[in-house]
Image 1 (cartoon, rainbow, N blue to C red):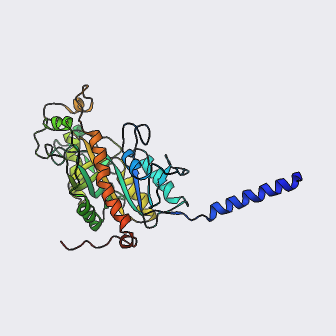
Image 2 (image 1 turned 90 degrees about the vertical axis):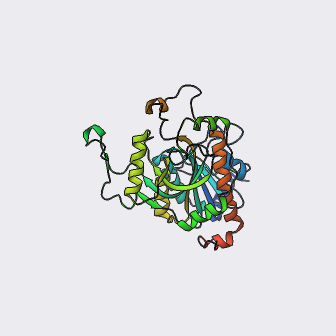
Image 3 (image 1 turned 45 degrees about the vertical axis):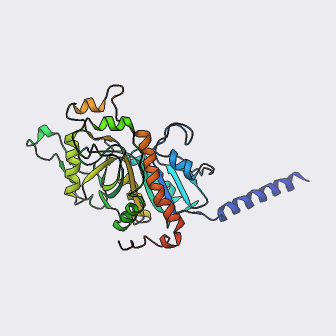
Length: 336
């Protein structure tokens, strides 16, 4: 075989391989699960937001590297895909946009579940609860100033004009209705450490056992903390006409925005498990709560990340197993 012939044959084989790759059908995604962080590996060690999902759906999946995304995407044969997008608005939305635009995936009919941990005000939630968003509110978009520069007790936040279309997102009520219908009775784990920690708070909500609920999720790059900031979050939620603020997190509104611009958000959900309260108890300052002594942190992290997957997988499995009913949009809720 001559060198010229061998070179030509190699080029032809490479062209054929590239052509086959470009002609490959994109993965038709039915449900896309987006986590924000993992602790260590995807399996076999302490679980973060992704591990329980990974072990349930993708333990044998081949990672698909996406240019511009922080981590690979994993998919199974049933069309359930997922990835760790990164923490905060920029990381998560940049990764999601890269995945949306990658031709390896057909996400045109996909349902999106942003899944992770969060904080909750003790007047409305408890450690270990799992919550489906009814509204997503961007906490950061607006004008904010120091309390000492204002009339005592008056709000220190004012919305900024021009942000109306991307500071507030309503999650499809029928989709949320389905989520609650399918998951409200999910058995949730609790821990002795979490039970003990809850007793520090006088609020009835804070002393509840874990449950599945709904409400407004507040997205802020700032890890806001303390009763004053919690009250401001509630003020913003009400100012915008959303439901009660019940979850503080750092990504969902940003991810919703890029999905909305590309596909719309009629198939978008935010699912969070509460692992901390957004303020200290009456016997400690905000700084003491932010920097607790050893052994003084809230318990229940391991149980909560498992609870989130237990709840989210119920809806995921239902959508996949009833795909003919869900493929063209959220089906009507059955009559009570």
